[in-house]
Length: 103
Image (cartoon, rainbow, N blue to C red; front, side):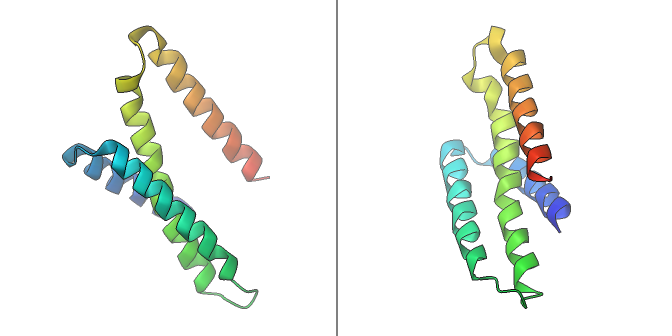
């Protein structure tokens, strides 16, 4: 559920960022949707076999959109001499947080 919906979020985010010009609004809206569904995950009880994976899927869609938006729009906001370092730091921090989160 987690990997496939995050990948779907990548594709949806890429399509949205390609054809829509309100990039900042899309990122803020995706963060709001992410916060809403993270808050809704508190309602999952131990016996809920369908509610938990569904909410995780709804959480992972905006995460994929935020990831593709931040990686695609980073070269537009950084000076030319800092793009390599900024993309490296973004990738390193993302992978470090993912490895800590999966422990």
